[in-house]
Image (cartoon, rainbow, N blue to C red):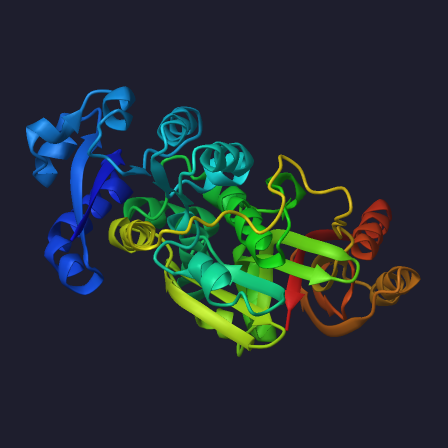
Length: 425
């Protein structure tokens, strides 16, 4: 039976979960996959982590050279996170011909071109299923399940922290600050949640997934990004009244105008499949030209779900002799003939504060009409101090048209636009 030696770099949440899965399932993999996967080395700066997991002392390495120079190590699993040290360690493994499995979405989104170049030079495998959407096998689905399709679009909830926060704001009426504090208490949010709540995490993942789906490099720098920090209880309440649920969506489309990649808070109709994806769960809605619509759903983070994705990559690498790399030219930037659409089309939700007097709505409608923006739905209610609140939902229009209309409204004395959110039906 083929034996595969694995080294795990970092025994934190993901690395620890991976160690548990590989050790507890070793006999199961021998029986079902015909391969003996043995964790022969770990690199962990905190000995207590290794001791808690029961790692034998002789398997604990003190530096990366000790790991990559170990002849018993075939596959190196990077779980330390960040970029600087992780990149150094991954390159060290690839340069010596070791296959690498990583869960590091930031590293892969920013430096996959460098990593893949080295991997190709040394005939080493490079796997990254765990970098996107935790235990949901979205990468394997795109590369080994839907390769018979031209993918037209993918839309997903791919960050568990923001989905949890928005779910609590929607279902429990919490403010953003209250919901985020609860997410931190439960371990769904980091002490510094910036990467999640400002949309960076989702943008890294969308860069990776769109590149795979559309067979061309989609750099992270091309992803339009807007986080959830400005979302208010009032927006959530207004959306519910209109039949919408607010989600942080990652949207990738391959259109005639070019590739469209964006991450932002979005109202979705209550009957949309993504509307029911709650708490820290993730889902990705994919449209292929042959298969039509499919949706993958599951836990987007956590020690065991993410460890499951890592174990899947390890088994795949151990049982497949052919090494696959990108189906496109994987450079630092997009190829010159690839267009990116930034004036994308969407419907919009606008919340405005106006003087509570006659003629105001007509003036707003006149400005919107000038930029070819038409109204589908409206809510109006009184506010204190002789003010009123008007909420509008528009027909689909161009992003630049809405931006220009909002700028024009705000430059006048008729109203102040307090919130702009995108809408999908």
